[in-house]
Length: 178
Length: 177
Length: 187
Image 1 (cartoon, rainbow over the protein chains, first blue to last red):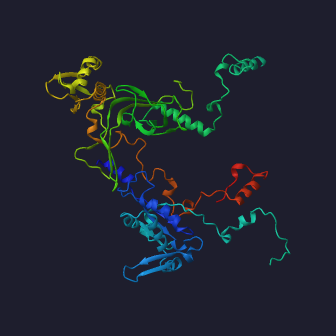
Image 2: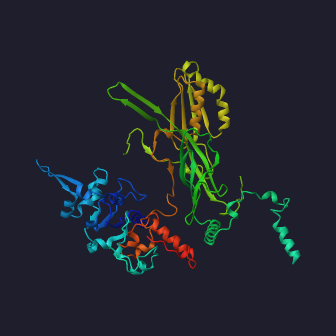
Image 3: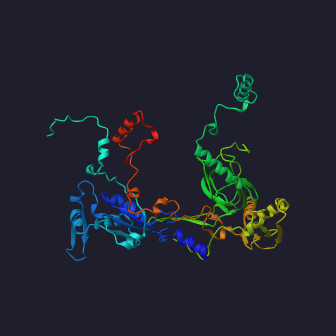
């Protein structure tokens, strides 16, 4: 290949590092989006034999939000292979033990069960908080948008906005709130 | 002053006019999109595109709808089309259903087709033959049912001769159908 | 995923010598008709030769037509093309109409097209005009200098407008001293 064509090949098949903030996100919905980037399905050059997947770095995985009763009810099954080695772990127990496991299992489950799955999972990095090693964060060039809206906390809204917000009615000054 | 006004009025009445001005037969009630006032950025973009069309610097490619399928073609490439198709070898064709035409610097996207006279795509039929034999094998196991169907489809090979963006964008086409 | 067959090789679409770009040349070089003058199996071919062959030769001046009457041999048509392919076809017991159609197929082919499986139905020398895709083709340039993770790129911005927001915008619009472009939509 000539030098120019080789540079073009490097450019087209370059592996991008994406960062995804899992704060207050549903792991199963996010897994659907993350798996696309891991497998390379977001690229027009995708082919299953092409090794075109990107790296995804998930941060704040301890702040994940499961729906409804799932923290109490959802159980993860594990068998050690030995007789009597079956165990069912509830979501909250698993999260306490290892805060990265829930989203890792969610992404693993969202992919097809073929031989490429384990190799693709190696491209996923999950960190429970904001703290990411320097060399990993230096490679990151793109951010994946969150799926669920993270609402601003009422006490995080700046004071001027609260004052200038149009009021329909206000309590009289001597009114006592129970 | 009054004469100037009358003159301007007469010029304005050439197309509209009460009992039909001289050229009123060229004006229709169906106002074409071009006569509506366009905002500034659109005008700039169109002017830039027209300048690039005049310069004709790079290769063009187009997406054309042919025999139910859409093909991305450029000058000098080969296309194989399957099924019964009347055109004979050596015939020159124009492919009219152009969905998108583009050069290195700009693209014209049709909704769904580009304006009829704007892009001319010419092609020549090179060869008409039969495909390789395809076997369609059916079997139902344990039911003594086995069928083999041999099929050869007619294939026509087209050579795309040229793709030209002939007219300017947003102006009346010179070659009206 | 790959269909390998020793007897049906896979090939890409090709046309010999840029045929069609400048002028078009008929690819059939010569046809040879081998037939028996008396045997029944050559009846169709004999009818074709008597009725249609002279017209065929006149309409295709670039094709050389040979005839080989051979006793006690089954009828055969052999076509030779400009790219060197040789197509042998037995027309034993074929009717006159069928033979006319097969001769037409031979005339319009550009070689032995059915001996190879076409891998793709298109061929270009210039697969990319606006430049091949790179991961940076459709990315926002501000990403280059951004400090990731940044809520500007990370927060969800595709939600439908909430009722509160609509009420607020309605209130802002009916104010006298506010223009439409200055209204900022939250979220």
